[in-house]
Length: 181
Image (cartoon, rainbow, N blue to C red):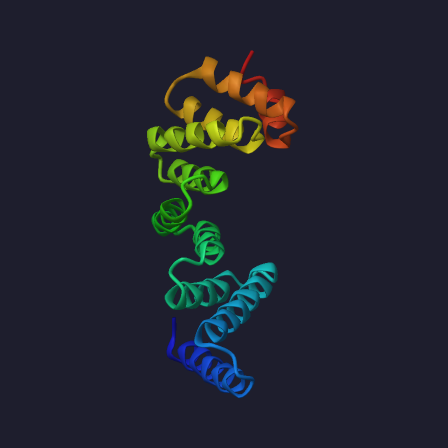
């Protein structure tokens, strides 16, 4: 985070803290107001394709509230989009530490592991995700890729067929290309 962004965030926090104090809010309510504002600011930037700026906002939220699962998850998404896969793994691992049943964090971390060519770790995450949500087309599709890269063509094709049945468009394209014939 560059100095200008740090100064802007500090100014925002001070401005909001002053206005909250005037309104008689507790410190906890003040913090929630600041983190909500920063999180929403990050979402707007994310939706506008400004992933580095969004990441800075989401990181600021996590610094203020280390248990803010959604901000940590968004950090992971930003890092994955920016191809910072090791950082994405760290972010998604943080989500899992806070919420071990967060199925999408396992799918996302598994996808980052695939990008890092750590296919066994990726498969482990997709397996957990599928235990938590057995009809996750994305998890089947991505696990199919991991299996393919590990030389398990039969397993890959089974996963892609399951993913296709669940409506995954990417699996449909993969199967159309005759890999599984």
